[in-house]
Length: 268
Ligand SMILES: Nc1ncnc2c1ncn2[C@@H]1O[C@H](COP(=O)(O)OP(=O)(O)OP(=O)(O)O)[C@@H](O)[C@H]1O
Ligand SMILES: [Mg+2]
Image (spheres, rainbow, N blue to C red):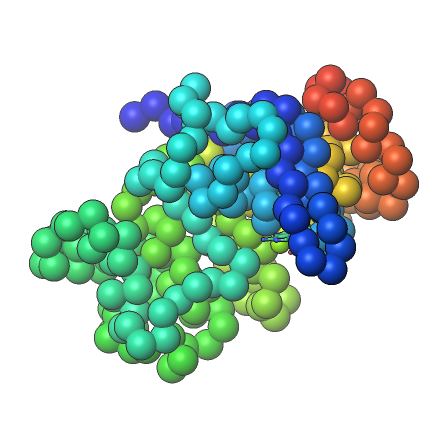
């Protein structure tokens, strides 16, 4: 099946806030996420990453510009997109299986069918079958993240939007989940847009790392290294250095041609 790509064209999102007046969370942003590739978005807190993901998920509308999926304007949430939100968003009163199958339930898929699908995805994210009957509070943070991933994958979306999916985990669990996530993606390459604060995570997982500051893109790095990767590889060390330096540069750089989507790419 053909995978789809996400395209942001001159996208801006302005919020009216009581305390701060008008806030442009995203400004005139151009970004094209290639089909079947992992694009990682890094940037400081408040630079507009979640806003961008919500626009791609169809949960919010841009103030200016347009967001496309597979060439079509995104008008609202669709089955082709799976979202793993920053908070995880599992419903505490629902068993794991019913959390995972929620999207299918909303679409009217019969119970037996959606539970069968939920069990398949539970296995894909390497959780034991008995977890299906637990409630989220009975699980560890790592298990909950796996459940949230399973829920995003349950309706087999072509596009996966992930907002800091590994941020709350300890280093060992995070490393294990990184490996499992890449294996899962390699077995079926979806278009992934992943937000993270961790530059290491970005360079280990991404085909492309995009840096954001103050609502704009400020740098763009292509990552061609074979997977699995190790942060101690010389090319990874060099890329880490470059991404960190791009993150440190002043947001004024956001008005540079790269930020406006001129597309200068640094190949690693
Ligand atoms: N619904 C909203 N109403 C008003 N302001 C908002 C709203 N959503 C986001 N903002 C503002 O837009 C800016 C970008 O927020 P966003 O959540 O996209 O940042 P972020 O890059 O995801 O940050 P973090 O890394 O902390 O999650 C912030 O200034 C935030 O306060
Ligand atoms: Mg965020």
